[in-house]
Amino acid sequence: MPHDVSLIATISAGFGLALLLGFAATRLRMPPLVGYLLAGVMIGPATPGFVADLGLASQLAEIGVMLLMFGVGLHFSVNDLMAVRRIAVPGAIVQILVAVAFGMLTALLWGWSLGGALVFGLCLSVASTVVLLRALEGRGLLKSVNGQIAVGWLVVEDLVMVLVLVLLPAVASVLHSVDGGGAADLATEQIVRALAVTLLKVTAFIVLMLVVGRRVLPRLLWWVARTGSQELFTLGVVATAVGVAFGAAKLFDVSFALGAFFAGMMMRESEFSHRAADESLPLRDAFAVLFFVSVGMLFDPAVVWAQPLKVLAVVAIIMLGKTIAAVVLVLLFRYPLNTALTVGASLAQIGEFSFILAGLGVALGLMPAEGQSLVLAGALISIAANSTVFAALEPLQAWVRTRSALARRLDQRDDPLAQLPMSTDQALLAGQVVLVGYGRVGRRIAAVLREERIPYVVADENRERIDALRKDGIPAVSGDASTPEVLIQAHIARAAMLVIAVPDAVNVRKMVEIAQTLNPAIAVVLRSHNEEEADLLASESRAKVFLGERELAHGMSEYIRMSYRGVSSPVRL
Image (cartoon, rainbow, N blue to C red; front, side, top):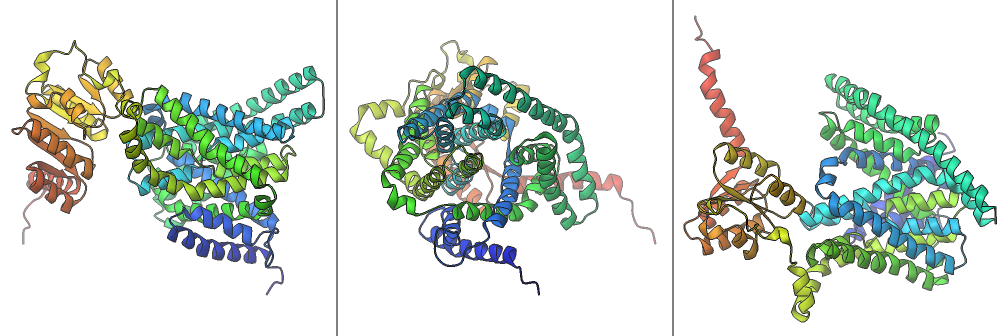
């Protein structure tokens, strides 16, 4: 047996403590990520007892970063981002600038250098996608419009931070020069030269991935999938993620994160992308745990009692400054108060990119080690409190609505897209179909209605979709169809049929109840993914309910019945 087992000791201690503390965190209704970070603190050099190998943990964390970013690339959807681009892109950029300004001003007041203040502000400006996705999933908000806006917002933040990770090493020497009192004109010249060289390398890498990687990586995945070996397929996915990330760093001097992100994006072009995401998920999760454990090892808990005011300032920027800025921005885009508060709660924490930036800032000598501990303290507190923030949204809105006329007005914004234009042909508003939801199912239904020349009105929460439909001359209203105002605007009282193309069992009942109250004779068509739920909806709402699996089996059976006799022949003895 070898005597040097530091790698095994680091992994076993990290996984073991992460399991125990992650389980304890979930029992306390906190994200397990809090437990992973605390596990790192316990085996780190700042606490007594067993101390894991920090060097090995850092290398394992790099693999975790690669696989995390690979997963982000696999799930990155340009279409999802484009659906909310009008609010997500400008909102995220302005919110990042506000948070960076808060962080920089605070750090400069503490006497930090300009470079350290900049990195510190960037660390506080970006929320954790992992924490957000799990919070939205736990509350059934992931597929809602509010959830889509929040996810799109964070995707933009992630893209900005990927660019920051690429550019920060290039400008580090310039920031050192400025902090050291170097000449401004020399600093400007160095910045331009450093940015030009870095952007040239990044552009070359991106072009190579778009031209070559986009064709080669999906084909490679197809070749491996043809072998029928599950372990080879998983190995191919992981080898691609780590290999592209390492090659990008060595050949183009870009970060591991950017290389892995583009590897995931190119893999998404493959028909096996969902399988790649599913089969690499356990390994990605395992190394993500090691990443958070290694981050916790760098945290010095003494900063909490040694610098309590600084910790309080960091938490205030994360949970108040960023949140208020996001809420104001969303309201300025004329979205209701509910959407603004959901997006604000989504951003009231920091996570994985903050850790990566903090580590890079310390490694480049820009930010003091104290800054990294402050960032980690802010992350621990904000992540632990995030579930409470989300849980408080609904009672907070109810409390504010009952006491504030302004809040009630903000919750029912005077949105021009919430009303049908006066120019709408009245012939289309009698005996029409009211189609709720214009997603993948709704679009196909609308296409059939157009072919059959059946008049219809679309009701959808996505304002960008409504705007696009109106430009095409299709009557459409924006808003939540489980509220009477939206269905009234769709002229439900004069409609022949209500078709609900969204799989939302709770709100579907409200929609049907409102529609049948306003129009007792209306026919109702619903969709469902659950057989028991489908039977319940059919009995409760006197509706025709289509179950996905049932309709698929029916269609396949009909095809088999109709075509079997044409391809079969009697067996002769």
